[in-house]
Length: 210
Image (cartoon, rainbow, N blue to C red; front, top):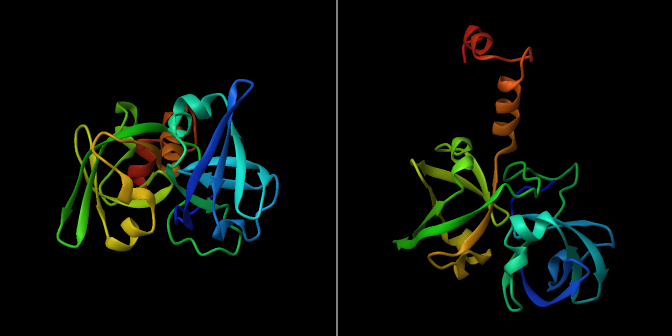
């Protein structure tokens, strides 16, 4: 599990085909401090397992759905990636619960400055729109962000200068693909409401004042 607070921006050094997957090697510094083989690392919001380590980089192997359902399969050497180690039980939860399980790939519709702040508009896959609400949380390339506005086909994020300068958002361009993970709490609630005879339904929630 992760918090969506990016620890550093790494650089993809190399990719290589292995069987039906890809081995990716990422140069980093801060996250290498206590990293060990088998540890989980969020790479652009995708939970991956460390398979090799050196003093200057780490490697992981992306296979199957990871290559087809996220942007990791299209990254080229030189790409900047957001990195975060798995959180510990005593970590401050400064962002929100991010699992590293990408729900879909969105597209940047607009990325523009408005004074000191920046406005980022994303067009998500249609089936994710129901989970996106104003003032709710979303993970974009592993970054915990708050939705400022949710519209019929897209959502908008207001990005402060610190977030822009400490993540790979500064490299985004209109049309760029980004990994999206919706708030897991919304999916749990949906699952409970949809389950026949489950513990929650709309009538019960209304009786409780929700």
